[in-house]
Length: 76
Length: 510
Image (tube, rainbow over all chains, first blue to last red; front, side, top):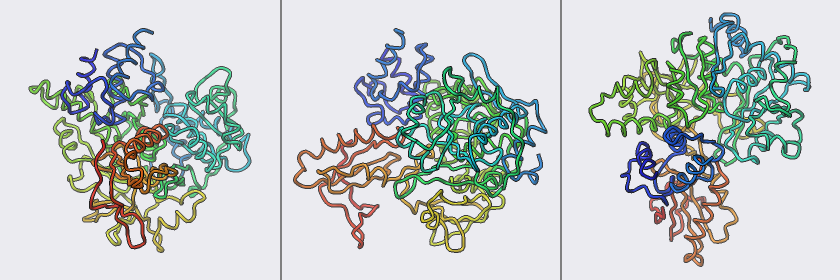
C-alpha cells in the first residue's frame, strides 16, 4: 500500500517516492498544505474505493496515519 | 438584468425570480442524485425563512450560519437578508469556543447549523445564551430543521429594505489578534456584484469551491451568478474538487492561489510522467471541455502559475480585494487580463490613491465599519474617509501594483489572513520563554523564540511541546510549521518593541 500512497503523494509534493516514509509528518516533513491534503484524500478515496469522512481526518498527521485510516476504512 | 434596478439583495432575488422563475440556480450532490433549486423556488423559500425569523424576533434579527456551503445554507442566508435581517456566516473550521465567541460578539439570536454541528447546537444554551432558536440545515429527525420551516411556514410579505442597512457581518483577522466583524450593507454587496460587466451570462455554470463565509465567495459566486442568471453548483468538499469538475462541467470558477497551485502541481506531476501529453489535453482532462475562465484572488499569485494555465488554454484572471471592500478592488477580464506584474484594473465606481506608499480606497463597496468596534473602524480610515488597505504599492493607468504589506497580517495562499499577534499571544504563560515572534517564511507560518537563558538546555523540547499544543487548538491553515530558536534577544525599536523584521534569524529546528 505504501507504494501506491507514495505514487499519489508525489502528485502533490516535489519529492522522490523514497523520501516519503511511514513516519514522515505531512505538514512538517513533506510540506503538504491543508488543501493538497484534502485533494489527496479524495484521490485515495477513488484509488482504494473507500468513503472518507472529513470529520475523521483531524488526527492524521503522518503517512502511517493515512495507511492506518485506509486500512480501517477498507475493513469496514 | 438591469443593474440600475438593483439596490438591495431583495431586488436581486425578486428580479432573478421574475426573469427566470424556472431556471435552475443551485445544484449540489445529494447522495447519488443531484439536488436543484430554481430562482423562483429560492425566492419562495427565502420568504418562508424570513417569516420564521420575524416570528421569533423583535426588530432586526441577527442570524448566525455555521456550516459549509450548500442549497440549504444559501436558502437560509437569502431568507435572512431578504427583508432586512442580518446574516453572520461563521468559519466552520474554528473551535467551538471561537464559534460561540463570534456568534456572541455579533449579538446573534437565531442560528442555522450544519448537522456536523449538532453537538454544538445541543450546548447552545450555555455557549450562546442569547440564541432563542437553532435550526438544523438538513432534515434530521428529532431536530428542528429547515425542512419544517419550508413545509409549514407561510411566506413573508416583502418589506422595504434600506440599501444602506447592514446585510451581513463577516469576520476577518485583526492585526491586534481578535477577529473583527466587517459590516457590509446591501448597497456594498450590490455595488461589488455589479462593478464589472460582461463577466458571465445565463449560459454560465459556476462551480463554487470557496468557503461561503468569505466575501469573495458570497459576492462573486452567490450574488454574481444570480445577477447573470447563471447556475451555481456547490463543491461539497475540497477532497472532491477534481471529481466535481467532471460532474458539473463548469464554465467559470473562482479560485484562491492555493487551489490554483495545488492543481498546477498535480498537472505538472502528470506531465512529468507523460512528457508527450500536450498541456491543452491535460487541461481538458482535468477541467472538462466547458471551462472558459478561472478568476483568482485573495493572495499573491505567482506568474508561472498563470502561464501554465494559459498553456492549458485556461485564462487564470487575477483580482485584488479585501473583505472590507466587499471584496473587489480590482478585476481582470479575458479582454483585459492583468499583465503579470499588476493585480488587475480598478473596478467601476472605485477610486484608488496612495499615501506614504499605502493603497487607499474609496468606493460604494467600502464597509460600514467593524461591528461594535469604533476604535478599529477609525484606525482603518484616513480623516477624509479613505479606507487604508494595509498594502503597499502604486497605481498606474488604473492598474494596481502591490509591493508589500504595511500591517503584520500574514496572507496565506488560500486567502486566509493570519494574525501573528494572535498566535504570539498563545505562547503567553510559558515560563521558559522570554520573547516570541511569528512571521511567514517561504509561505510557511514560522515561530521564533528567545528562551530565558536558564532554560536554554530544555528550551527546544518545551518549544516543540508548546507548538504542538497550539497547533491542536487552531484550524489547520493557522498551524505553525517552522520553528526557530535563538540565543540572542530580538532587536527592538526605540519604543522597546520587538522589530518585525529581524536582521538575524535563530537556528531552524524544523
